[in-house]
Length: 133
Image (cartoon, rainbow, N blue to C red; front, side, top):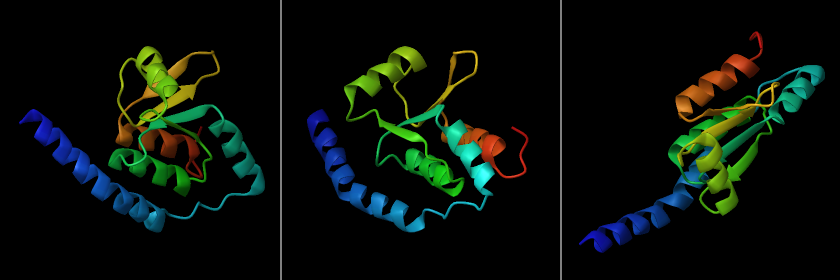
């Protein structure tokens, strides 16, 4: 019985994944307008970020859309398909859960944010025009 349930959900994922990715592509907002200097500063700050994600995870899609809206070129690391990223997520972040935003701080430590709403709030606080970062 357990194997039937597992294959059922795999089939559902196979069917829904293309629709979820198409929906993301069609509904991703355009990046906000910034001056060239502000955009360059945002892009520089984004080099200290990495998003551990699964391509078709709805919570990951939500975070990626926010990153696109804020115009942030954040490195995306697929923790499902890449065992190295999965191991990093488990060993350094403490658990295998996505989405997870790794923030390399000035002191050399890394901050790991796991909840999509928490990640979005941090990104908005840090990168929204007019925010104090």
